Length: 471
Ligand code: NAD
Image 1 (cartoon, rainbow, N blue to C red):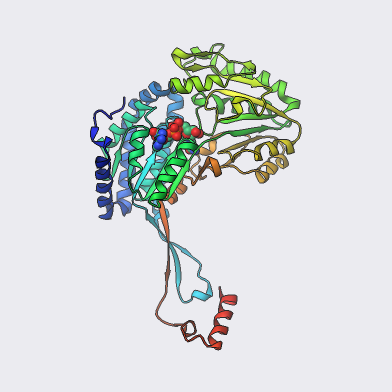
Image 2 (image 1 turned 30 degrees about the vertical axis):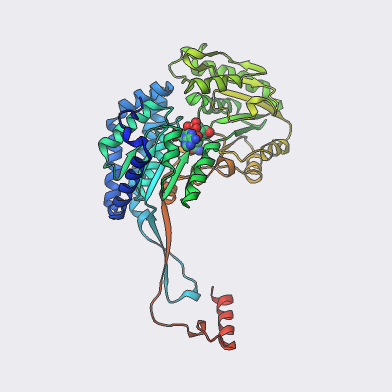
């Protein structure tokens, strides 16, 4: 349940202004910059997550019918692991990094300092309502910012627990959750922030970008789109099908990096379909609706939207039940590019199959569309996967697996073009929320007189030489 009614003060613009200005005052004291402060907050967050684990599991069950396994692996456990990862490396990341100094600038030394931006805003989605909010939050804390969190109103149970957890654990001048939907967010983004990280759909991403532009606030946009999956005829079909089925049906397909559609070599399509049917039964039994491991669609609106995408040559699943917001794991064969299921991000448990003959056709199909958040290739051939990596553009590529990169702290997680800008995870999250400030330090000795006016021919020749040879 949303706590909006319990905290009416955050509904008004003036209340939001107060929260932002109190956070700015707090940031300006410099308290958040020290390593000890950042460590303390990360540790407090970790302990709070452990304390609230049961409530979070219950909230994720209530919002999305997430099983304990999915909720722990993809939301709670991974967030704790992310905190530990950052705690181990924070000292190293915070140290000014020395970089080489060309002769032209000698004597001198060159450095990169990381400084926090200031007051940051994190806007979260509903599909991984905990992980997609706390993941960026870990980066923002590590980088020394103050933080306002606006979780999604659609996952209201999780938002309420997050709000309770944060208000019980942190000083609101440092971290504060503001619950609400489009109206509250519209008010909130009128305020001046020093950094905004938004996770959500591309259309709302545009609105956030425009609002940020008014204050020249830097942003990271973690957006969505259609992430293709290309399956070569030379592949381990058993493992390929299992991995795609896992990626598509976990969270009932409501994952920004779910394999959206499958481009399948026509030689193996029949076998792929048979194995996919078997795998669905293995995972969720003969009636997936009765499985405790199969989630539900978040809202009635999204249920209706996803249901309408089931059309054409349905070869598995296809059933739905509005009373439970249940949509069965579904496979649609012979899908055409102009079919509805290919016109928008599916965000539901539907696997559309489109066959191809040659790799060139598959690459051309992908390159004619918006740049995806993730691209998946299944093949035993290195040449096949390397061609796809080199001839397409996407937020990330995975060879012979799906989605795992999102939980990999050594890899940046983010999109490109329509699927987003910027990234986080581990050091990339720290960097995202830090301004990299270069510092060139020079002694007073050896002052090059030739750079000063009057610009005599001798001086010009000297500077020309220095620029050509010493830079
Ligand atoms: P959404 O864009 O509808 O909502 C995201 C956030 O924006 C929510 O907090 C919501 O309250 C707020 N919002 C909604 N309307 C608004 C408006 N008019 N003005 C200002 N704020 C507004 O996205 P969603 O439905 O919560 O999430 C699904 C989308 O998010 C999918 O497209 C998915 O691919 C994407 N997603 C991306 C990532 C990623 O990391 N790249 C992760 C999860 C989800």
